[in-house]
Length: 268
Ligand code: ADP
Image 1 (spheres, protein in one colour):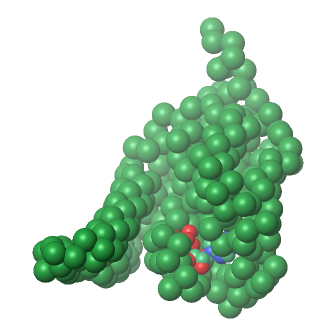
Image 2: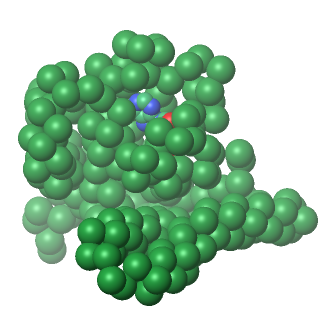
């Protein structure tokens, strides 16, 4: 899936670092195919919950005299509408990532803050599922980019780690910087991913186990969003996993160059 419409690179211009938005995809036919595929996939994903909402509304209407039935149907109606909301939000996130101006004015962002925000967003769910969420270390590294997108990327990885783990296990989030890059690793002791599916998990709408993912509320878009967000920052995301043992997803981002950090802290 090399359909990255937006290719953002950190490039040095004079003494300032800017993010260049480049369109790598010169082949407009390929772009058309990608769009058509995407729309076909979205339509397919939306059809089921929309049909369910209609059917459930009818069922509620017919069961009006039986409160227990009505409650059962309204419960399912709530679930289906939540699912529609999730899919819609994911699609909005993805299209935001593909709009040209997303990183035209990058900010200097602290990686520790990104990680802390993403961890906070997952604390309640982790606790509810009896999963220990542990941040292993801090880096004090800074990157150039869009804080909310990066929080969203790390948040997606942590949410997946929790989602595909069993109660009583541990999800670790570690940060380390090495030679101009910073790595954020999210490790779980969950179900893992079969080797033959490893390079497909970043594809839109791909799920290892469709039924399971649907049941746990998955849309199949999360990792695709992560990949785009990270690539837009000149970074990448990798996965290591073993079926039945667990997974580690690692985001690598270029660290903000020292003079960008100085300029921010000490504006002339
Ligand atoms: P979903 O919304 O289905 O979780 P994602 O794009 O986030 O979609 O992930 C795609 C698929 O990759 C998931 O359906 C799941 O099968 C697999 N996956 C993602 N993260 C993990 C993980 N931490 N452990 C095991 N499987 C995972």
